[in-house]
Structures are given as C-alpha cells and as structure tokens.
Image 1 (cartoon, each protein chain N blue to C red):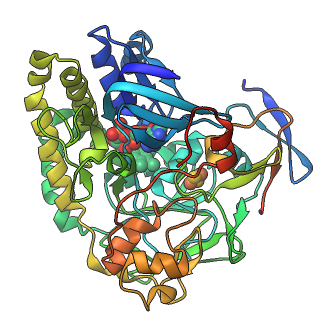
Image 2: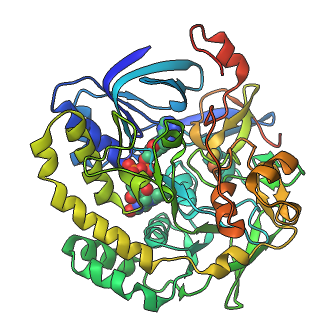
Length: 410
Length: 82
Ligand SMILES: Cc1cc2nc3c(=O)[nH]c(=O)nc-3n(C[C@H](O)[C@H](O)[C@H](O)COP(=O)(O)OP(=O)(O)OC[C@H]3O[C@@H](n4cnc5c(N)ncnc54)[C@H](O)[C@@H]3O)c2cc1C
Ligand code: FES
C-alpha cells in the first residue's frame, strides 16, 4: 500500500505541473499513470527538458504503467499494473486524467490502419515506421496540423489534410493565434513544414475501403484518395470516468471545477483537459494552481489566475472554430458498426430509445473499452447519454481481484 | 543504437528494436490486424493510447494484453487474431 498527502492521477502536462508545485510544500506526492512513461498525450515520454528536470528533481513518487480502476471508499483508490493490484491512500487528490480522441463512425471506419490522428502519432512515437507510407490526416481541430507535421518529419507521404470546419469559421482562431507571439511562431513553423500538402477545409471522410486494411478513403467532396493509413480524429473528449465514480459533478461533458480547481467533492481537485479542452498551457497552469491550492499555497495560486484566464479565452475560440458540423453524425449506415467491442451496428440500435435499453439487448458499450469509444458517438448520433459510471472503470480480471488479500472485489 | 529484440509472433521468429511497443512492432512486420472482432472482422490499433482495446493480443499465454501499452522484450510469445 502507498500513502500520499497529494495523489495525482495522470502524468500529462497537468499532472507533472501539479507534482512540481505540490512538492514545493515538502509534502509527500505521488503521480499515477497508465502509460509506461510520464508525459501524457502531447509529450509521451519525451517531456521537454525544463519540465523533466523539475519533475525528476521534485522528489515525486511516479507509478507508471499503473491504472486506477476503483474508488471503494473516501481516501482510497485501487490500481492495477500488468502484474499486481495496489492500494493508494491520499489526503488530497488531483485528477489530471486528460482526454481521448473523438471517433465518428462512417462506412469502413473499422478497417485496420484507420486510427485516430493522435492515435497514429502515438503509434509512431511507439516505434511504428511511417517513412514512405501514404497517409491521409482527417477530422477536426489543431491536433490535425500538429500530427501531420510530426508524421511528415518521420517521412510519411501525406496525401491530404482534411478538416471538417470551413476555413471561414477559423478566422477568429487564426487571429487569436496571431495575437500570441509564441503560438503564432509555432503555427507558422508547422504550416511551413506542411507547404505543398493538399489541405481540404470543409471536407470529411464519408467512406473507407480496403481488404484487411484501408486502401482508400472517399471524401465528402467526392475525391477518392489512396492511402496506407487514415489518421482520423474529430477533436477530444475528456476522460471523466474516474471523476464521475468519485461523485464529482460534471458541467456538460467536463468536470466542474471552481477557481481553486476544486471539484464538487471535498479534497478532490481537477486540472487540464478534463475541465475543458484548451491545450498545453491550460493544462500546465491549472495543474499548478490545483496543487498550490491543495497544499494551502494561496498566494502562489492567485498569482496565476490571469494566466489561466487567457487559456480559457483561447479554449472558447477553439470551440467555435472547430465546432463539429451536424452532417458528421449521419455518416454511418444501417450496417456500420457503432460499438466496436461488441460489433453492434447502427441498424441494431434502431428499436431502442436509450443507451440503457440498448445495452440490455445488444451489449452496446459493454465491451472492454466500456463505452469510451461508442459513448461519445451515441451522444452525437443518437442523442443518448450515459447514466452513471460503475466500478471497475477499466476491465480487471476477477481472479486477480480475489487473489489480492485485503482488496475487496465489488 | 537500440538493441534488437528477438521474439515470436504466432510461433514465427521475428525481431524488433528495443523500446518499440508490441503494436508498433506488429505493424512494422506488416501485421495490421491484432485481433478478430466478435463477428470475425480483422481489427488493429485505433487510439494508440490504451483506451480502445483494439490492439489486444495474447502475450506469453496471457490474453487481452493491450499491444500499444506494452514494450517488446526478449523471448516474448505474441499471439494475434484471438
Ligand atoms: C492522442 C492525443 C494526442 C495528442 N497530441 C498532441 C500534440 O501532438 N500536440 C498538442 O499540442 N496537443 C496534443 N494533444 C492534446 C493534449 O492532450 C493536450 O495538449 C495536453 O497533453 C493535455 O494535458 P493533460 O495533462 O490535461 O492530459 P493528458 O496529456 O491526456 O494526460 C492524462 C494522463 O492521465 C492518464 N490517465 C487517465 N486515466 C487514468 C487512470 N484511470 N489511471 C491512470 N492513469 C490515467 C493517461 O494515461 C494520460 O497519460 C493530444 C491529445 C490526444 C488525446
Ligand atoms: S490502440 Fe487503443 S488500446 Fe491500444
């Protein structure tokens, strides 16, 4: 068993920043992440020097390859590694569980080699050799450009970048980027890297074809593009399962947090993408504020309020610029699988009025991903909401649970 | 230079670079599908970050291991298509 004064879930930018700030008070700090290395989605094990040094020197206890799956009582979390189960006790908890990509179903989307945009990038960081491979990057949001630039750097042959939002809706976003010199410079560098790659605005994939893997993708403008990989993500959805399990109130899709980054549950804070999708700076500043607040360092927390406000303004601009078009939720046909774990088609959901009903009859959303992929799809396509989260929030085999003495299976 | 890791996939000897995930190593060897879905469709990695379970393989007889969250190691036995 491990006990911490401050326990942080998620070692992405928000969690790392929180750990560094919390350690300034000398308290015992632990960070847990399912990934094998710290860094979260953007850094993935390649944390920038400034942050690695501060993190490594902070005296934080990192538990990598460790996934929280239950919160059986106040102050206690249960986690699983590949080999064992562990108990984690805390006085204060900071949730920095980040976000995942939004996938939307269209005919052919389950073919191998169709991945998320961030998904393909993560695979490349994991050693996938993309050099010489023809890739189409599609979906929505600033992530597409970042991913395309990174794939290009690794030698991919980019066939097209396909953004569903119209160029006209992105003017304010562009203006807001230009008003921030560091962002403008980054943006300019990315676009320079990508000059010559066909960029389609206001378009999206309507069909993918292949045999055993994707071979081509047809776009809404009628173009059919041959490819070896389709990297397709429609923005990000927050990982709120643990927060919900703890009873934290949500605000829309996100975890509600006040100016102290405090959730509706005492001693539980939230920071980063789970409170709103706003990019790296937002995660860093919220993580820092949450930790200062959790350790009673009020003045230090307050000094960052203005910085946080800027990131929240940026977040709202991004929401408007990349708002998803309603057509995107109508691409699946009767035979298109909506739930990939249980192979439930859109047609099979027809008789039902709620996700709950559909679950009972079709097992939709009851496979190993526990609705993480199809939940946001059902929300958009059917208008169905998920009701409540039940433990374990990740699959755990029961034999392992029972074996571990002192840990109660529920 | 990263070390070469020797292991087997479906009984065939293969090699990958140290530090690669099992999911990436499979893709580099031209194996796009890690598993079969309940209706028998071939499936490969989707999210790359441990969420979707499409990259599941059997490793040293342990089923349902996410290939994107596991690094290759010497002598491991990977089974796809389950
Ligand atoms: C696939 C992907 C790729 C991205 N790539 C880029 C990019 O290239 N450039 C860019 O600017 N932005 C990128 N983003 C956006 C990026 O998420 C943010 O800019 C930033 O990383 C968010 O930081 P965070 O700390 O809030 O969350 P994250 O970085 O998402 O970190 C959250 C961490 O929590 C862990 N976690 C969640 N639940 C549990 C649990 N139950 N138990 C244990 N650990 C858990 C996750 O493993 C993860 O490491 C990407 C997003 C995604 C989803
Ligand atoms: S690719 Fe999604 S869990 Fe591995």
